[in-house]
Amino acid sequence: MTTEIKRAFRFALDVGPTEIVILQRYATASRCAFNFAHAFFLAADQMWQRGRDALIAAGMNRSEANAKAPKVKRPGRGRAQAFWRETRGQQFVGPLCEGAERRAAFAWWEMVHNRAYYTAFEDAAVAWQNHMNSRSGRRAGAMMGKPRFKAQGRCRESFRVVHDVKNPSIRFTSPPGCGSPVAGASPPSLSGCTRRRPG
Image 1 (cartoon, one colour):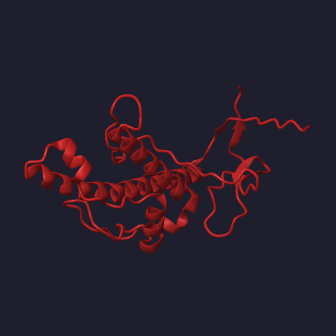
Image 2 (cartoon, rainbow, N blue to C red; image 1 turned 90 degrees about the vertical axis):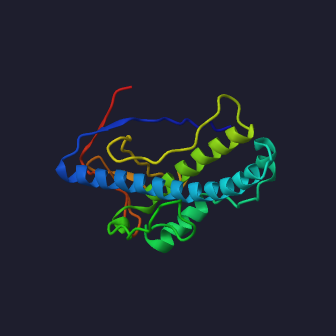
Image 3 (tube, rainbow, N blue to C red; image 1 turned 45 degrees about the vertical axis):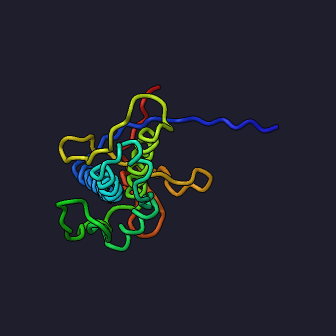
């Protein structure tokens, strides 16, 4: 019988000006991707709400209107991800939120590894799923409000880059750093700026 032992390590980054620019670019890209997916999901929810509100205006009570409102196919992470690829970060193809305008594509979107975007799409999809489960009563606890856009300067700037642990493509380089051999835009290379944290 084989025993598998998993250990997690924490590393602190001692970055210089060049690495700070890279990290800020990734954090900004992740925030923009989250907002992109959130706007996509919000537009679908607003479409459903307009149908429900029309029933309420016609005299139907809210609970009955919630049940009988016209069904709207709610997109998930995969659809948001597909539209992002198709538009190169431009406003998604489809219904816009009320009062929203289409924007030009982000010129730097290809300078960031796609995994930073995909994890942001996943975060937005999970936030919306939690809200929908709470609204329908499938999630216990207090009612969860709708997710919000991440505002620059008011949200915690962060990003995640993940990989398949059974087939890792992100490794520590020598001297210690975070790099990746994958083709195209790679995860941020922070060679020589990691140090092990105690505990």
